[in-house]
Amino acid sequence: MVLLVKCWYRLSRVRFKACTLVFALIYLLVEPMMRLIMILPKFYQWGFGLVFVVMCVGMGCGDGNVYRGPINIQSDQDVAFYASYTQVDGNLTIANTGIREASFPNLTKVTGLLFVENNRHLTNLNLPNLEEVGMSLQIKNNDNLMELNLNSLDTVGTAIGISYNDRLTCASAQAAISNVDLPRDSISITGNLDCP
Image (cartoon, rainbow, N blue to C red):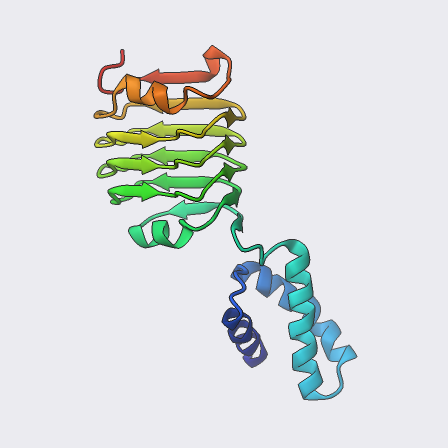
């Protein structure tokens, strides 16, 4: 266990952003092999760190601006932490939070779902450089949402729903997705400020 903490500390100093689950699985799989391979304690610790780094880089854990896995935003701190990423390989969810503004100025692609729902205080959703959502885009039940910036969005995989955002006008919702080419029956804009 001490080795696990030492390796994690060592890797965090070089700014590897590997998730704990991946690290734990690698530790459980590689650690027994390393005991057989390494004889001296110093070589043992160095060897495990090297194997982890090689495996992590091969899996893409250290890609600087690509986040691998789902993101679930719950606070302003989460927004600030993830704001520098350019791509999310997975879903991006902002649901049931107290945040007032969600801005991801660098984000260009979400490979899964983009889901923004039940954020009572959210007034501004700003994704100015987002070009692609791999699956579905759903923005629903955000009582105070007034500003929606999806100006670069041109590709959505399956469906778009922008509904029941009490202060968002239909014109704003339609303008946000005006560049997206989807069949009409795959787009739902209803129940907003001036929408039927």
